[in-house]
Amino acid sequence: MISKFIDNKYDMKTFDLKISDGTVANATETFHADIGIKDGLITAIGKNLGKAKKVINADGKLVLPGGIEAHCHIEQESSSGIMTADDYYSGSVSAAFGGNTCLIPFAAQHRGQKLQNVLDVYHHRARPKSVIDYSFHLIISDPTDEVINIELPAIIDQGVTSFKVYMTYDKLIVNDSQMLKIMTAAKKLGALTMVHAENNAMINWMSEKLLNSSYKAPKYHALSHPRAAESEAINRAITLSTFIDTPILIVHVSTESGARIIAKARYDGHKVFGETCPQYMFLNAKNMDLPEMDGAQFCCSPPLRDKASQEEIWRCLQNGTFQVYSSDHAPYRFDETGKLHAGKKPTFTKIANGLPGIETRLPLLFSEGYLKKRITLNHFVALAATNVSKIYGLDHRKGSITEGKDADIAIWNPKLKKVITADDLHDNMEFTPYEGMEITGWPEIIIQRGNVVIEDNTLKATRGDGEFIHRKKIDCTGMPGRVAPELNSKHNFDVKFEF
Ligand code: URP
Ligand code: ZN
Ligand code: ZN
Image (cartoon, rainbow, N blue to C red; front, side):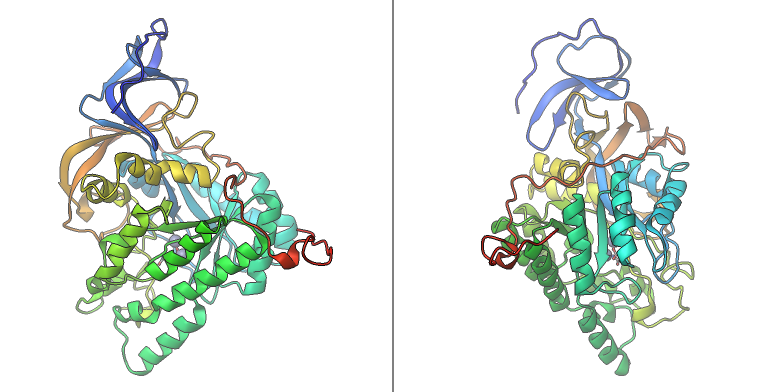
């Protein structure tokens, strides 16, 4: 550890807030320093900084950038019409208690909807309720020419520079030619396409076979989404995106075979990113082998795999194949409003998919990743905040403790031990898949733009304190990629393709 600041050039300033004596960590460095905050920004990092209206003593604590949760479903209707259990209040409060100061949930287009209307609805939901800053990714399920050529550019101009497409789910699926259209638009507009990559036909085929043989219980969901369905779709999505040379991010990867395809594309210099989630590192399909409908609590897509897969996913996080680690918080209660919306004893195909985890994402990684020496503290920070701030165009404001950036800070107590239990979490769920796990290291104080959001285990922020953050266009500098030779006028008899 270095002590890099020795001067007291800020002596004469009065800060709004000073965090003193902490161990500060960014994605690239760890050092002892005080942090001076004024007008919502980090204005000084050093020693003997001088006076402040409020001082937080962080001796013995870790002072880290606030986490950025980049994949969560908040106040979102699923394609079957069910609403997530968390709205922008409970979702953002839970995120903050889990060490986050920024969220990027989805604004979901369902078929027939205009993108601007969709975005307006989500602004309307988030603005009065969110206690921390937020942006949105769009979900595109109806890529008509009007949507792609007219509506999408307007959305990207409004700072929503990423969108998700689905290769499965009957009401969301886009086919290969639609994917190419969407990706071409993303290339032209400087946006990032996120892909839920699972082969729909293989899932339907497996589901039909299982149901025909009366295998209906929740645990069979894990079999119905085979590993090969994920790797086939990842391969196809990456083939399409690298064909035209546009950035792509494969979300919630659950298999080593899928991760290898991502790693190979990155090795080849393509603009390909990978995300995984805690459920693929901490849970496995055995968790679903429960009596009655209890296994429904663990139904998510892609599904939980096995113990060996957990280790493989950890390795791919350690070796950098995954740059993004998100919760994929998709909160559906274990009742008729959520998991059991289709009846008391639905077949596995009719159970709402998704797990809660917005509050446990970072404590799980801190305890089992950093403290157990699977990753460094700096890698933890990269996965908590810095990587997504860069990938999703937020790094002009967030993702590191740097002079000039938003004072979004999480102060962690690395010694605090707690057992995870649903009763202590702040989401609107009555269960957590991590119930009973003992975790060491929790965030204690959360600061957003210089204001205390959480202190003494108490929420200090109020509804609507969070702001919408306009994101930059996607920058893949350093990832050269190349369009396919057939599209390159040097190799195609000088045919010029318009992108
Ligand atoms: O099962 C999951 N992950 N549900 C949430 C929706 C999605 O595909 O991300
Ligand atoms: Zn998905
Ligand atoms: Zn999701």
